Amino acid sequence: MAGIAAPDGSGTTRPVALELRGITKRFGPLLANDGIDLTLHRGEILAMLGENGAGKTTLMNILFGHYTADAGTVRVADGTGRLVPLPPGRPRAALAAGIGMVHQHFTLAEALSGLDNITLGTEPLWRLRRRTDEARDRLAALMARAGLTVDLAAPVGSLTVGERQRIEILKALYRDARVLILDEPTAVLTPAESEGLFSVLRALAAQGLAIAFISHKLGEVVAGSDRVAVLRAGRKVAERATAGADRADLAALMVGRAVAPVRRTARAPGPEVLALEGVAVAGPDLRNRLDRADLVVRAGEIVGIAGVAGNGQAALARLLFGLARPNAGSVRLLGRPVTRFDPRAAIRAGIGRIPEDRHHEGAVPAMSVAENAAIEEIRGRFQWFGILRRRRMAARARDAIEAYGIRCPGPDAPIRLLSGGNMQKVILARALDGAPALIVAAQPTRGLDVGAVAEIHRRLLDASGRGAAIVLISEDLDEVFALSDRIAVMARARLSAALPAEGLDRTRLGLMMAGQDVDHTPAPERARESA
Image 1 (cartoon, rainbow, N blue to C red):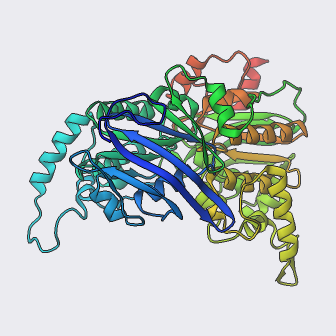
Image 2 (image 1 turned 45 degrees about the horizontal axis):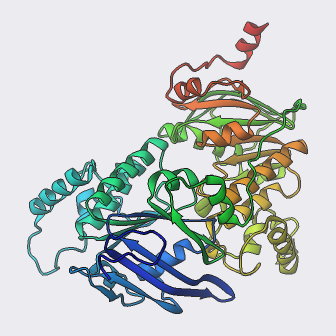
Image 3 (image 1 turned 90 degrees about the horizontal axis):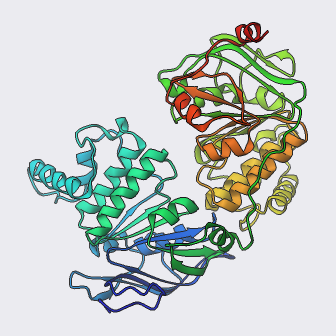
Protein backbone atom coordinates (compact mmCIF):
# COMPACT_ATOMS: atom_id res chain seq x y z
CA MET A 1 0.00 0.00 0.00
CA ALA A 2 3.02 2.30 0.41
CA GLY A 3 3.12 5.05 -2.20
CA ILE A 4 -0.55 4.64 -3.12
CA ALA A 5 -3.17 7.31 -2.43
CA ALA A 6 -5.29 6.16 0.48
CA PRO A 7 -9.10 6.23 0.29
CA ASP A 8 -9.44 8.92 2.97
CA GLY A 9 -10.11 11.94 0.84
CA SER A 10 -6.63 13.37 1.34
CA GLY A 11 -5.54 12.78 -2.25
CA THR A 12 -1.94 12.28 -1.14
CA THR A 13 0.44 9.76 -2.70
CA ARG A 14 2.74 9.74 0.33
CA PRO A 15 3.32 6.29 1.85
CA VAL A 16 0.89 5.15 4.52
CA ALA A 17 2.47 4.95 7.98
CA LEU A 18 -0.56 3.83 9.97
CA GLU A 19 -4.00 2.40 9.22
CA LEU A 20 -6.95 1.83 11.57
CA ARG A 21 -10.01 -0.03 10.32
CA GLY A 22 -13.35 -0.55 12.08
CA ILE A 23 -12.09 0.27 15.57
CA THR A 24 -14.86 -0.26 18.14
CA LYS A 25 -14.58 -0.02 21.91
CA ARG A 26 -17.20 -0.18 24.68
CA PHE A 27 -16.95 0.60 28.39
CA GLY A 28 -20.08 -1.07 29.72
CA PRO A 29 -23.06 0.71 28.13
CA LEU A 30 -20.84 3.56 26.83
CA LEU A 31 -19.81 3.20 23.17
CA ALA A 32 -16.50 5.09 23.13
CA ASN A 33 -15.44 4.22 19.55
CA ASP A 34 -17.87 3.11 16.86
CA GLY A 35 -16.31 1.55 13.73
CA ILE A 36 -13.63 4.21 13.17
CA ASP A 37 -11.43 4.14 10.05
CA LEU A 38 -8.32 6.32 9.95
CA THR A 39 -5.17 6.58 7.85
CA LEU A 40 -1.97 8.49 8.58
CA HIS A 41 0.76 9.15 6.01
CA ARG A 42 4.48 9.76 6.31
CA GLY A 43 5.37 13.45 6.53
CA GLU A 44 1.80 14.39 7.46
CA ILE A 45 0.34 16.13 10.50
CA LEU A 46 -3.18 14.87 11.23
CA ALA A 47 -5.39 16.56 13.81
CA MET A 48 -8.03 14.54 15.66
CA LEU A 49 -10.68 17.07 16.60
CA GLY A 50 -13.65 16.47 18.84
CA GLU A 51 -15.45 17.58 21.95
CA ASN A 52 -14.54 16.12 25.34
CA GLY A 53 -15.76 12.53 25.49
CA ALA A 54 -15.86 12.11 21.70
CA GLY A 55 -13.51 9.08 21.85
CA LYS A 56 -10.24 10.66 20.69
CA THR A 57 -8.05 9.57 23.59
CA THR A 58 -9.64 6.11 23.70
CA LEU A 59 -8.74 5.62 20.03
CA MET A 60 -5.12 6.65 20.62
CA ASN A 61 -4.87 4.42 23.70
CA ILE A 62 -6.02 1.48 21.58
CA LEU A 63 -3.35 2.36 19.04
CA PHE A 64 -0.64 2.46 21.72
CA GLY A 65 -1.79 -0.75 23.39
CA HIS A 66 -3.19 0.67 26.63
CA TYR A 67 -6.66 -0.58 25.61
CA THR A 68 -7.71 -3.51 23.46
CA ALA A 69 -10.36 -2.85 20.83
CA ASP A 70 -13.54 -4.96 20.87
CA ALA A 71 -13.41 -5.00 17.06
CA GLY A 72 -11.22 -3.67 14.27
CA THR A 73 -7.57 -3.83 13.21
CA VAL A 74 -4.48 -1.63 13.41
CA ARG A 75 -1.68 -1.90 10.85
CA VAL A 76 1.59 -0.01 10.90
CA ALA A 77 4.35 0.33 8.28
CA ASP A 78 7.51 -1.61 9.06
CA GLY A 79 11.03 -0.54 8.09
CA THR A 80 10.39 -1.43 4.44
CA GLY A 81 7.08 0.44 4.25
CA ARG A 82 4.96 -2.72 4.28
CA LEU A 83 1.84 -2.53 6.47
CA VAL A 84 1.82 -5.24 9.14
CA PRO A 85 -0.75 -5.96 11.90
CA LEU A 86 -0.03 -4.46 15.31
CA PRO A 87 -0.61 -6.89 18.20
CA PRO A 88 -3.44 -5.48 20.37
CA GLY A 89 -3.06 -4.46 24.00
CA ARG A 90 0.75 -4.44 24.06
CA PRO A 91 2.50 -1.05 24.50
CA ARG A 92 5.88 -2.75 24.09
CA ALA A 93 4.79 -3.98 20.64
CA ALA A 94 3.70 -0.43 19.71
CA LEU A 95 7.10 0.94 20.74
CA ALA A 96 8.87 -1.78 18.77
CA ALA A 97 6.73 -0.91 15.73
CA GLY A 98 7.95 2.71 15.85
CA ILE A 99 4.93 4.33 17.55
CA GLY A 100 5.68 6.99 20.15
CA MET A 101 3.06 8.67 22.32
CA VAL A 102 3.23 11.88 24.36
CA HIS A 103 0.45 11.85 26.93
CA GLN A 104 -1.36 14.97 28.13
CA HIS A 105 -0.12 14.25 31.66
CA PHE A 106 3.58 13.58 31.30
CA THR A 107 5.10 10.29 32.51
CA LEU A 108 8.46 11.53 33.77
CA ALA A 109 10.51 10.89 36.92
CA GLU A 110 10.99 14.41 38.26
CA ALA A 111 14.03 13.58 40.41
CA LEU A 112 15.97 12.23 37.40
CA SER A 113 17.68 14.30 34.73
CA GLY A 114 16.25 14.71 31.25
CA LEU A 115 18.95 12.40 29.90
CA ASP A 116 18.08 9.67 32.41
CA ASN A 117 14.36 9.97 31.66
CA ILE A 118 14.96 9.61 27.93
CA THR A 119 17.30 6.61 28.16
CA LEU A 120 15.40 4.82 30.93
CA GLY A 121 14.53 1.32 29.75
CA THR A 122 16.61 1.47 26.56
CA GLU A 123 19.71 -0.32 27.90
CA PRO A 124 19.94 -3.97 29.00
CA LEU A 125 20.12 -4.59 32.73
CA TRP A 126 23.15 -6.88 32.38
CA ARG A 127 25.34 -4.09 30.98
CA LEU A 128 27.88 -3.11 33.67
CA ARG A 129 28.35 0.45 32.50
CA ARG A 130 25.96 2.94 30.93
CA ARG A 131 26.86 4.47 27.58
CA THR A 132 26.05 8.01 28.67
CA ASP A 133 28.38 9.81 26.28
CA GLU A 134 27.01 7.88 23.32
CA ALA A 135 23.42 8.71 24.36
CA ARG A 136 24.27 12.38 24.88
CA ASP A 137 25.86 12.64 21.42
CA ARG A 138 22.88 10.96 19.78
CA LEU A 139 20.44 13.27 21.57
CA ALA A 140 22.44 16.32 20.58
CA ALA A 141 22.06 15.27 16.93
CA LEU A 142 18.32 14.65 17.43
CA MET A 143 17.82 18.05 19.04
CA ALA A 144 19.70 19.81 16.26
CA ARG A 145 17.67 18.02 13.59
CA ALA A 146 14.31 18.69 15.27
CA GLY A 147 15.04 22.22 16.48
CA LEU A 148 14.55 21.16 20.12
CA THR A 149 16.48 22.82 22.93
CA VAL A 150 16.44 21.55 26.51
CA ASP A 151 18.96 21.10 29.32
CA LEU A 152 19.42 17.33 29.51
CA ALA A 153 21.47 17.53 32.70
CA ALA A 154 18.85 19.37 34.76
CA PRO A 155 16.41 17.43 36.97
CA VAL A 156 13.05 17.22 35.19
CA GLY A 157 11.34 18.68 38.26
CA SER A 158 13.20 21.96 37.68
CA LEU A 159 12.10 22.30 34.04
CA THR A 160 9.16 24.29 32.69
CA VAL A 161 6.11 22.47 31.32
CA GLY A 162 7.22 23.19 27.75
CA GLU A 163 10.70 21.76 28.44
CA ARG A 164 9.19 18.63 29.97
CA GLN A 165 7.13 18.13 26.84
CA ARG A 166 10.32 18.34 24.75
CA ILE A 167 11.80 15.60 26.93
CA GLU A 168 8.75 13.43 26.14
CA ILE A 169 9.15 14.05 22.40
CA LEU A 170 12.86 13.24 22.61
CA LYS A 171 11.98 10.00 24.43
CA ALA A 172 9.92 8.94 21.41
CA LEU A 173 12.51 10.05 18.84
CA TYR A 174 15.32 8.33 20.75
CA ARG A 175 13.39 5.08 20.33
CA ASP A 176 13.28 5.63 16.54
CA ALA A 177 9.59 6.50 16.36
CA ARG A 178 8.17 6.70 12.84
CA VAL A 179 4.70 7.66 14.12
CA LEU A 180 4.28 10.26 16.87
CA ILE A 181 0.95 10.67 18.73
CA LEU A 182 0.36 13.67 21.00
CA ASP A 183 -2.66 13.87 23.33
CA GLU A 184 -3.81 17.49 23.89
CA PRO A 185 -0.23 18.76 23.46
CA THR A 186 -0.96 22.42 24.23
CA ALA A 187 -3.34 21.95 27.17
CA VAL A 188 -0.73 23.17 29.68
CA LEU A 189 1.44 25.35 27.43
CA THR A 190 1.63 29.11 27.12
CA PRO A 191 0.89 30.63 23.67
CA ALA A 192 4.63 31.08 23.01
CA GLU A 193 5.36 27.45 23.99
CA SER A 194 2.52 26.27 21.74
CA GLU A 195 3.98 28.13 18.76
CA GLY A 196 7.38 26.60 19.50
CA LEU A 197 5.87 23.11 19.67
CA PHE A 198 4.22 23.36 16.27
CA SER A 199 7.43 24.69 14.74
CA VAL A 200 9.13 21.52 16.00
CA LEU A 201 6.30 19.29 14.71
CA ARG A 202 6.47 20.87 11.25
CA ALA A 203 10.23 20.30 11.14
CA LEU A 204 9.79 16.65 12.14
CA ALA A 205 7.04 16.09 9.57
CA ALA A 206 9.28 17.58 6.86
CA GLN A 207 11.77 14.84 7.71
CA GLY A 208 9.15 12.12 7.13
CA LEU A 209 7.73 11.57 10.61
CA ALA A 210 3.99 10.80 10.66
CA ILE A 211 2.31 12.90 13.36
CA ALA A 212 -1.20 12.84 14.82
CA PHE A 213 -2.31 15.13 17.62
CA ILE A 214 -5.53 15.21 19.61
CA SER A 215 -7.07 18.62 20.15
CA HIS A 216 -10.29 20.53 20.62
CA LYS A 217 -8.75 23.95 19.84
CA LEU A 218 -9.89 25.07 16.42
CA GLY A 219 -7.14 27.65 15.98
CA GLU A 220 -4.25 25.26 16.45
CA VAL A 221 -5.95 22.55 14.38
CA VAL A 222 -6.34 24.86 11.38
CA ALA A 223 -2.87 26.39 11.75
CA GLY A 224 -0.91 23.28 12.73
CA SER A 225 -2.26 20.33 10.69
CA ASP A 226 -2.50 19.16 7.09
CA ARG A 227 -5.69 17.18 7.60
CA VAL A 228 -8.37 16.95 10.28
CA ALA A 229 -10.57 14.05 11.35
CA VAL A 230 -13.61 15.07 13.41
CA LEU A 231 -15.03 12.68 16.02
CA ARG A 232 -18.40 13.06 17.70
CA ALA A 233 -19.99 10.65 20.18
CA GLY A 234 -17.48 7.93 19.28
CA ARG A 235 -17.90 8.15 15.50
CA LYS A 236 -15.83 9.80 12.79
CA VAL A 237 -18.23 12.31 11.26
CA ALA A 238 -15.91 14.18 8.88
CA GLU A 239 -12.42 14.21 7.42
CA ARG A 240 -10.95 16.97 5.29
CA ALA A 241 -7.89 19.02 4.44
CA THR A 242 -7.42 21.92 6.85
CA ALA A 243 -6.24 24.37 4.21
CA GLY A 244 -9.10 26.84 3.90
CA ALA A 245 -11.23 25.00 6.49
CA ASP A 246 -13.95 27.07 8.08
CA ARG A 247 -13.74 27.21 11.89
CA ALA A 248 -17.46 27.64 12.39
CA ASP A 249 -18.09 24.58 10.21
CA LEU A 250 -15.57 22.50 12.19
CA ALA A 251 -17.12 23.64 15.48
CA ALA A 252 -20.57 22.60 14.27
CA LEU A 253 -19.22 19.20 13.19
CA MET A 254 -17.67 18.72 16.65
CA VAL A 255 -20.80 19.33 18.68
CA GLY A 256 -23.55 18.62 16.13
CA ARG A 257 -24.91 22.15 16.11
CA ALA A 258 -23.84 25.73 15.44
CA VAL A 259 -21.91 27.18 18.40
CA ALA A 260 -22.67 30.85 18.97
CA PRO A 261 -20.04 32.87 20.84
CA VAL A 262 -21.07 33.91 24.36
CA ARG A 263 -20.68 37.58 25.32
CA ARG A 264 -21.48 39.46 28.49
CA THR A 265 -24.16 42.14 28.64
CA ALA A 266 -23.10 45.33 30.39
CA ARG A 267 -25.03 46.00 33.58
CA ALA A 268 -24.64 48.17 36.65
CA PRO A 269 -22.95 46.24 39.48
CA GLY A 270 -24.62 45.84 42.84
CA PRO A 271 -23.22 46.17 46.36
CA GLU A 272 -19.77 44.99 47.39
CA VAL A 273 -19.47 41.23 47.87
CA LEU A 274 -15.68 40.75 48.19
CA ALA A 275 -12.99 43.20 49.24
CA LEU A 276 -9.26 42.60 49.67
CA GLU A 277 -7.15 45.38 51.17
CA GLY A 278 -3.37 45.03 51.27
CA VAL A 279 -3.61 41.23 51.45
CA ALA A 280 -0.34 39.30 51.44
CA VAL A 281 0.14 35.53 51.38
CA ALA A 282 3.56 34.08 52.14
CA GLY A 283 4.83 31.36 49.83
CA PRO A 284 8.03 29.66 48.68
CA ASP A 285 7.76 30.97 45.10
CA LEU A 286 5.87 33.42 42.88
CA ARG A 287 3.14 30.89 42.14
CA ASN A 288 2.19 30.60 45.81
CA ARG A 289 2.84 34.18 46.92
CA LEU A 290 0.60 37.25 47.00
CA ASP A 291 1.94 40.75 47.63
CA ARG A 292 -0.31 43.57 48.89
CA ALA A 293 -3.40 42.72 46.82
CA ASP A 294 -6.32 45.17 46.63
CA LEU A 295 -9.52 44.05 44.95
CA VAL A 296 -13.25 44.82 45.13
CA VAL A 297 -15.86 42.64 43.39
CA ARG A 298 -19.53 43.61 43.40
CA ALA A 299 -22.75 41.67 42.97
CA GLY A 300 -23.49 40.86 39.33
CA GLU A 301 -19.92 41.67 38.28
CA ILE A 302 -17.24 39.48 36.74
CA VAL A 303 -13.66 40.56 37.44
CA GLY A 304 -11.13 38.76 35.27
CA ILE A 305 -7.62 38.09 36.61
CA ALA A 306 -5.24 37.70 33.66
CA GLY A 307 -1.59 36.73 33.82
CA VAL A 308 1.11 34.31 32.76
CA ALA A 309 1.02 31.06 34.75
CA GLY A 310 2.96 31.03 37.99
CA ASN A 311 2.67 34.70 38.93
CA GLY A 312 0.56 34.37 42.06
CA GLN A 313 -2.82 33.36 40.68
CA ALA A 314 -2.65 30.08 42.61
CA ALA A 315 -2.09 31.96 45.87
CA LEU A 316 -5.11 34.20 45.21
CA ALA A 317 -7.30 31.19 44.43
CA ARG A 318 -6.12 29.28 47.50
CA LEU A 319 -6.85 32.30 49.70
CA LEU A 320 -10.42 32.61 48.38
CA PHE A 321 -10.94 28.83 48.57
CA GLY A 322 -9.98 28.90 52.25
CA LEU A 323 -6.79 26.91 51.68
CA ALA A 324 -4.35 29.72 52.57
CA ARG A 325 -4.29 32.29 55.35
CA PRO A 326 -3.15 35.88 54.78
CA ASN A 327 -0.21 37.10 56.81
CA ALA A 328 -1.12 40.75 56.20
CA GLY A 329 -4.13 42.83 55.13
CA SER A 330 -7.84 42.19 55.47
CA VAL A 331 -10.59 40.29 53.63
CA ARG A 332 -14.30 41.20 53.72
CA LEU A 333 -17.13 39.04 52.41
CA LEU A 334 -20.62 40.53 52.20
CA GLY A 335 -19.45 43.42 54.35
CA ARG A 336 -18.14 41.26 57.21
CA PRO A 337 -14.46 40.63 58.03
CA VAL A 338 -13.28 37.11 57.26
CA THR A 339 -11.38 35.71 60.24
CA ARG A 340 -11.54 31.98 59.57
CA PHE A 341 -9.74 30.58 56.54
CA ASP A 342 -10.54 26.93 55.80
CA PRO A 343 -12.51 25.23 53.00
CA ARG A 344 -15.53 24.41 55.17
CA ALA A 345 -15.83 28.03 56.29
CA ALA A 346 -15.55 29.21 52.66
CA ILE A 347 -18.35 26.89 51.55
CA ARG A 348 -20.59 27.87 54.46
CA ALA A 349 -19.96 31.55 53.71
CA GLY A 350 -21.44 31.07 50.23
CA ILE A 351 -18.37 30.72 48.02
CA GLY A 352 -18.67 28.52 44.94
CA ARG A 353 -15.27 27.00 44.16
CA ILE A 354 -14.02 25.87 40.74
CA PRO A 355 -10.36 24.79 41.25
CA GLU A 356 -7.68 25.00 38.57
CA ASP A 357 -6.74 21.31 38.72
CA ARG A 358 -9.95 19.34 38.31
CA HIS A 359 -8.18 15.96 38.58
CA HIS A 360 -6.40 16.55 41.89
CA GLU A 361 -8.21 19.45 43.57
CA GLY A 362 -11.70 19.50 42.04
CA ALA A 363 -12.57 15.82 42.21
CA VAL A 364 -11.69 12.55 43.93
CA PRO A 365 -11.03 10.18 40.99
CA ALA A 366 -11.88 6.95 42.87
CA MET A 367 -15.27 8.28 43.99
CA SER A 368 -18.46 8.23 41.94
CA VAL A 369 -20.09 11.11 40.09
CA ALA A 370 -22.78 11.25 42.79
CA GLU A 371 -20.23 11.35 45.61
CA ASN A 372 -18.19 14.06 43.92
CA ALA A 373 -21.29 16.15 43.25
CA ALA A 374 -22.21 16.02 46.95
CA ILE A 375 -18.80 16.02 48.59
CA GLU A 376 -18.83 19.66 49.74
CA GLU A 377 -22.16 19.20 51.54
CA ILE A 378 -21.82 15.69 52.95
CA ARG A 379 -22.26 16.87 56.53
CA GLY A 380 -25.36 18.87 55.68
CA ARG A 381 -27.81 17.76 53.03
CA PHE A 382 -26.47 14.25 52.44
CA GLN A 383 -25.93 12.79 55.90
CA TRP A 384 -28.35 11.70 58.63
CA PHE A 385 -26.88 10.75 62.01
CA GLY A 386 -23.63 9.68 60.34
CA ILE A 387 -25.35 7.67 57.57
CA LEU A 388 -24.92 8.80 53.96
CA ARG A 389 -28.19 9.50 52.18
CA ARG A 390 -27.13 7.85 48.93
CA ARG A 391 -30.53 8.03 47.24
CA ARG A 392 -30.56 11.78 47.73
CA MET A 393 -26.97 11.98 46.41
CA ALA A 394 -27.90 9.93 43.32
CA ALA A 395 -30.98 12.10 42.67
CA ARG A 396 -28.85 15.24 42.91
CA ALA A 397 -26.33 13.76 40.46
CA ARG A 398 -29.07 12.75 37.99
CA ASP A 399 -30.43 16.30 38.07
CA ALA A 400 -26.92 17.66 37.32
CA ILE A 401 -26.36 15.11 34.53
CA GLU A 402 -29.60 16.18 32.83
CA ALA A 403 -29.27 19.93 33.43
CA TYR A 404 -25.62 20.19 32.37
CA GLY A 405 -25.60 17.56 29.63
CA ILE A 406 -22.96 15.47 31.42
CA ARG A 407 -22.01 12.45 29.32
CA CYS A 408 -21.40 9.52 31.68
CA PRO A 409 -22.70 5.99 32.36
CA GLY A 410 -24.65 7.20 35.41
CA PRO A 411 -24.41 8.62 38.95
CA ASP A 412 -22.57 5.56 40.27
CA ALA A 413 -19.80 5.68 37.65
CA PRO A 414 -16.31 6.59 38.97
CA ILE A 415 -15.65 10.18 37.96
CA ARG A 416 -12.22 9.21 36.64
CA LEU A 417 -13.97 7.56 33.66
CA LEU A 418 -15.37 10.92 32.52
CA SER A 419 -13.66 13.14 29.98
CA GLY A 420 -12.15 16.40 31.20
CA GLY A 421 -15.11 18.45 29.98
CA ASN A 422 -17.70 16.23 31.61
CA MET A 423 -15.73 16.14 34.88
CA GLN A 424 -15.60 19.94 34.79
CA LYS A 425 -19.39 20.08 34.35
CA VAL A 426 -19.81 18.01 37.53
CA ILE A 427 -17.59 20.48 39.40
CA LEU A 428 -19.46 23.43 37.89
CA ALA A 429 -22.84 21.98 38.88
CA ARG A 430 -21.58 21.50 42.43
CA ALA A 431 -20.14 25.04 42.61
CA LEU A 432 -23.27 26.77 41.28
CA ASP A 433 -25.81 24.77 43.25
CA GLY A 434 -27.44 26.92 45.91
CA ALA A 435 -26.80 30.24 44.13
CA PRO A 436 -23.53 31.23 45.90
CA ALA A 437 -22.87 34.93 46.52
CA LEU A 438 -19.27 34.63 45.30
CA ILE A 439 -17.91 32.28 42.65
CA VAL A 440 -14.17 31.80 42.25
CA ALA A 441 -13.43 30.16 38.89
CA ALA A 442 -9.75 29.26 38.35
CA GLN A 443 -8.99 28.28 34.74
CA PRO A 444 -12.59 26.99 34.36
CA THR A 445 -12.29 25.99 30.69
CA ARG A 446 -8.66 24.84 30.44
CA GLY A 447 -8.47 21.79 28.20
CA LEU A 448 -12.12 21.90 27.17
CA ASP A 449 -13.71 21.82 23.72
CA VAL A 450 -15.59 24.68 22.12
CA GLY A 451 -19.01 23.30 23.08
CA ALA A 452 -18.08 22.77 26.73
CA VAL A 453 -16.44 26.21 26.84
CA ALA A 454 -19.60 27.88 25.53
CA GLU A 455 -21.74 26.01 28.08
CA ILE A 456 -19.51 26.96 31.03
CA HIS A 457 -19.34 30.59 29.86
CA ARG A 458 -23.14 30.69 29.61
CA ARG A 459 -23.52 29.27 33.10
CA LEU A 460 -21.12 31.83 34.58
CA LEU A 461 -22.87 34.70 32.82
CA ASP A 462 -26.26 33.41 34.03
CA ALA A 463 -24.91 33.29 37.61
CA SER A 464 -23.63 36.84 37.23
CA GLY A 465 -27.04 37.91 35.91
CA ARG A 466 -28.64 36.47 39.04
CA GLY A 467 -26.38 38.67 41.15
CA ALA A 468 -23.36 36.49 41.92
CA ALA A 469 -19.97 38.18 42.13
CA ILE A 470 -17.41 36.23 40.09
CA VAL A 471 -13.61 36.19 40.23
CA LEU A 472 -12.43 34.65 36.94
CA ILE A 473 -8.77 33.60 37.00
CA SER A 474 -7.70 32.68 33.48
CA GLU A 475 -4.67 32.61 31.19
CA ASP A 476 -6.97 32.70 28.14
CA LEU A 477 -7.25 36.35 27.10
CA ASP A 478 -10.15 35.65 24.77
CA GLU A 479 -12.06 34.20 27.72
CA VAL A 480 -11.13 37.10 30.00
CA PHE A 481 -12.31 39.71 27.47
CA ALA A 482 -15.48 37.80 26.58
CA LEU A 483 -16.72 37.48 30.17
CA SER A 484 -15.18 40.23 32.30
CA ASP A 485 -16.64 43.59 33.26
CA ARG A 486 -13.27 44.62 34.68
CA ILE A 487 -9.80 43.09 34.24
CA ALA A 488 -6.82 43.01 36.60
CA VAL A 489 -3.42 41.45 35.96
CA MET A 490 -1.27 39.24 38.18
CA ALA A 491 2.45 39.79 37.58
CA ARG A 492 5.27 38.81 39.95
CA ALA A 493 2.81 38.05 42.75
CA ARG A 494 1.28 41.54 42.60
CA LEU A 495 -2.24 42.44 41.49
CA SER A 496 -2.85 45.47 39.30
CA ALA A 497 -5.79 47.83 39.49
CA ALA A 498 -8.91 46.35 37.85
CA LEU A 499 -9.70 48.33 34.68
CA PRO A 500 -12.94 48.35 32.65
CA ALA A 501 -12.74 45.66 29.96
CA GLU A 502 -14.53 47.85 27.43
CA GLY A 503 -11.86 49.62 25.41
CA LEU A 504 -8.92 48.03 27.26
CA ASP A 505 -5.97 47.74 24.89
CA ARG A 506 -4.59 44.20 24.54
CA THR A 507 -1.09 45.50 23.92
CA ARG A 508 -1.14 47.28 27.26
CA LEU A 509 -2.56 44.17 28.90
CA GLY A 510 0.31 42.14 27.44
CA LEU A 511 2.82 44.61 28.90
CA MET A 512 1.09 44.34 32.26
CA MET A 513 1.29 40.53 32.11
CA ALA A 514 5.03 40.87 31.49
CA GLY A 515 5.33 43.01 34.62
CA GLN A 516 5.45 46.38 32.86
CA ASP A 517 3.04 49.33 33.00
CA VAL A 518 1.35 48.00 36.13
CA ASP A 519 -0.44 50.30 38.56
CA HIS A 520 0.08 48.75 41.99
CA THR A 521 -1.13 51.84 43.86
CA PRO A 522 -3.15 50.64 46.88
CA ALA A 523 -6.91 51.09 46.52
CA PRO A 524 -7.33 53.87 49.15
CA GLU A 525 -4.61 55.97 47.51
CA ARG A 526 -6.15 55.43 44.05
CA ALA A 527 -9.46 56.63 45.41
CA ARG A 528 -7.87 59.80 46.80
CA GLU A 529 -6.02 60.43 43.52
CA SER A 530 -9.20 60.02 41.44
CA ALA A 531 -11.03 62.38 43.78
